[in-house]
Image (cartoon, rainbow, N blue to C red; front, side):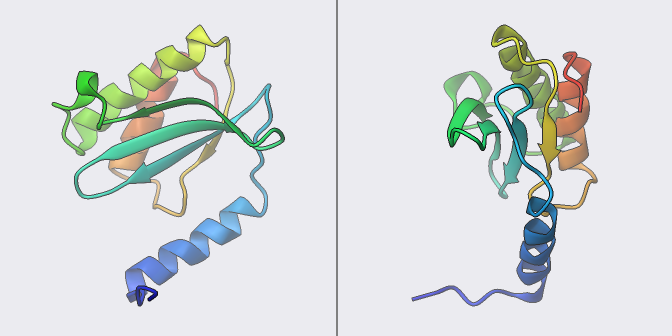
Length: 120
């Protein structure tokens, strides 16, 4: 019924819970969360007070389907997310790395978003 977690997943979930104790998004400063898999990347800007997603982007969209889940693709996806946030007049966000280590693809997503003018 439930998937038995390996040690790597258990450690990530422990980090995720620890991080989420202090992070909270609002309408003025939403929480920008990152999810990654072996094949796709996802980002969402979430207003935790209202429980709504303000903006989202993923490599499942036709426009970004050619991007691979590596650092180059992540940086381009981050820049596109930054543009979407700028269109909605969101200038600052709280970055939620979702328990992933801030390295490689996650860092590239953050750097791409910063390139578009979004402040963490």
